[in-house]
Length: 424
Image (tube, rainbow, N blue to C red; front, side):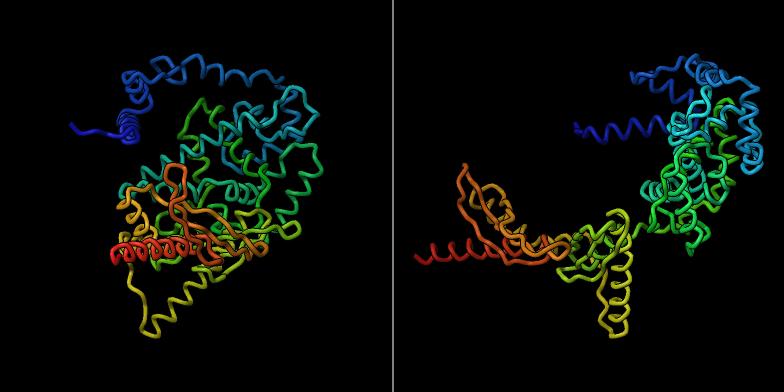
């Protein structure tokens, strides 16, 4: 009999749940989950008529209508309704979606945090459904990249600014106002008006989280006001989120693209980060040679900027190789793996022949200062709590190359010992 791993079995069950949902809707998926013994709290029947959801829909009715109307007019929510193209039956929901936790002037309207929690999952779901329905011939990996590009705080924040949601935000924080105003100024100067620069959160200046929260809160407010009509939410947000990324317009995350291109060329990548004042700096080295650097308010932002610069460097190298007639062929995954790990693999095979465990690598030297560290590693074979063989490699600016150096020297040492024994 064939043995299946747990991950494969779990994937199969998830796929079957997905099939039932696609073919029969939520009710069919819930019935299948019950059949499989997966706990489902919702009772059989119409999902919007079940007690948990009725409670979710009714709980917002506690705000006095007259007070809600006054506060809604003060916040200019009728203009916001026109902006999003949806008229609320219960204005208290939209009022809540625009209320920051710092706002203290209203005792009967909750802040947007619960709506934001719901809206986060909601937008993720409707975007996933859109990509699944619209692009039936692309891989799960590309679907994931599409969703990551469409659903992230940086993109939502710029969407918020585009439609002016922030002008209706009720808050009591001067710091929040300053951060939003400063970000709006910087975002207005961005070169990419179609929000493309915000895909994967690649923008250099990171948005205040509150802006993305507003978008998610509005989505949840529309869902509850429409009595859980996902199609109504999508009708509103499909227009707001234009242009929606497609496989043709998808921008690959620069860090991922750099990783893939470096693998094709069998290059080792090292990232070195350091804090410089209030900013972070990341340097990228390819095979020990520093080729790019980037700065940002956060390490991940600096890494993305550096990766884009490193990609420009690789592009110039590859163009020069083409001009000079020495372009490298694309290597197969097996060949890339062989080239990258040949030395350490051979050392491991040598240890296996001797009945030893795999070698281990220990950092013995770390000199210099960030982001220009140099590393020295020692390869050791530890058998029955005793070191039976060891060798220290060269001190190099790349962790991987330092380990490879130690592996090479230990491999040479073991082979020389074998030759010496044979000659005795």
